[in-house]
Image 1 (cartoon, one colour):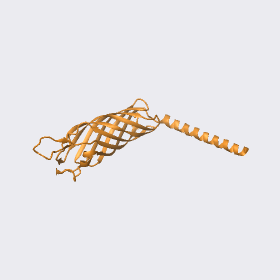
Image 2 (image 1 turned 30 degrees about the vertical axis):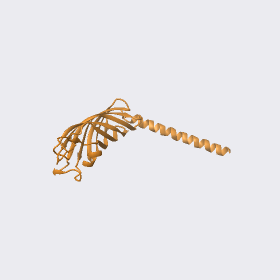
Image 3 (image 1 turned 90 degrees about the vertical axis):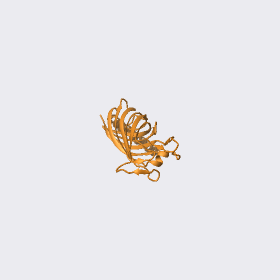
Image 4 (image 1 turned 180 degrees about the horizontal axis):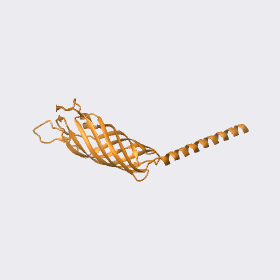
Length: 212
């Protein structure tokens, strides 16, 4: 019985020591992580559309660059460039004049606020903001035209801080304020009215950079 009690006590001491060393290591990592300051990130991923826009436009490449100001470990303010290249779904969209390269190119900017759910170096976060994009419709397709469109990005992600190195993976949905770049033409061409396409934009990216 005494030997069993001694063994339990030894195991308890070992577990406590392991937990303490793990906590100290985590604290060391957190103290060495550069989470405040200015971060510069570049990255890429995929961008697609939903609802009727998703039926007409195929998912394509997304790319961007972001400057982040973080006055605290949990609050971030971002200014970023975001672009994407997509092609029409030829089975749904009649393209009368094809071009080399993507059919639709989007170039835009956005201002975003992020809120970290923890203050740890591996940090999940939520984001929201406002943006504006210029859609350059390069292919001639009925119902599509170049236009400037406002959007509201909403989403979340996971950010890793390791010293000055910063990695960020995020998914966001852009609510389009105006979709005049995509209109569905009426079946009766004598009627001058038309309706705008419905849907928004989903974007998933991985971004790498440094915090200063």
